[in-house]
Length: 177
Length: 177
Image 1 (cartoon, each protein chain N blue to C red):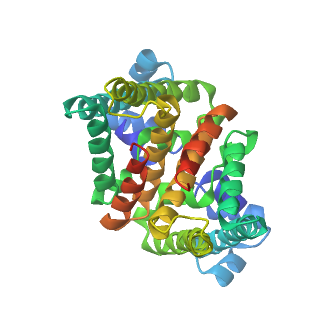
Image 2: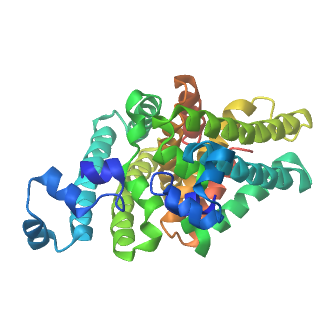
């Protein structure tokens, strides 16, 4: 996963994978069939971690909207931080190859849909609780929140000042009002 | 520019550049100093085209806000279209390398700032005209619009249904109200 994350799918050779996993090529092929098979497993591992992180942010807060707010404020701080150069493996994959490889596209989209469903569920709960206006559309808002995560990942790559990412987060969060 | 756009900076070799430009390596070095020099020139060329396209969208409309709306509606249609796999050279560059190369980061950020200034100017004009509420913050909104462009570029890579991109655009445009 780290090798694919650092270099992208195309630039990572089987020799690199043998090197970082300490496995022989025969063992890798036996377990994963192909470089693509190993990549899909790495994507699954990455996505599981991301989903767990978002679930935690949403459930540990005092309310669903507070959970969304705290998740995005943290994402904004991360985008202005030193480590933002790593971007997100799912976003990198979409941009590098998803349109060229149907198996990868299906897998990435499945993971992204899982994350979107977490936001949608939180927004629907907020609506049921009266925290979110009944006029709002949780499905459309969840898709918009996903798109904003991706935009923030790119913003992180521009080495933004913290005030700049805070301003983006504040604009985004006005939608939740 | 096309070679860098198709393959990214790192995967494009001097041999590829010799091949696509029909120039000898000596001529390329004489004119651009290095692969990086040629890449910066390609970025400039790409950005000039992008800036001109956005300026056109903003000035051809009946009002500044109508210009922003029509630009984003078109971007949404493009994100759902067949050619969305190409993404945007500036976005690709940010994610591939901007944090690792200061010269590239400065150049990409300069181009992105030019585009952001176009949106900010349109929003300020809208405010002067009374089309946009005086309570809105044109600077913060312009940064948010930029972040949304990047998010839409990633959304395009997921092969979204047209209704899905329309929904994102509709959410975004509620901010202009």
